[in-house]
Length: 130
Image (cartoon, rainbow, N blue to C red; front, side, top):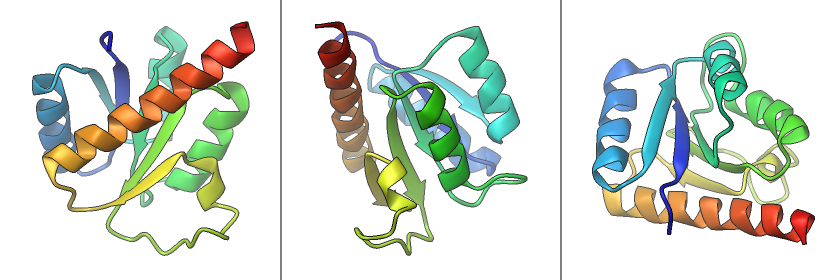
């Protein structure tokens, strides 16, 4: 798999840095943001293959960000990573994400989940271009 560009959106600096370090070590290109406004700036500078979104963020929650980003970038992979996953499969908010993973996540499970959402994003891009 080619290098995959991921943006981690997490307001807790220690968690954000730990996630970024692990994914960098695993071969991903990683950018980070502490909120939706910073994410917007990163996406304007360069699109990403996938997002890792916390739910509890300042100013705008992860589901709202996921919905907004999905509307403008329909092919992007979205992984919700949160300690407070309370959405069931029938919850319409949950449908904006490709996958949800509870914190704390084992590093290998996180990398596997990121690869899965990147594969979905690649498949969506391929189906649109073909």
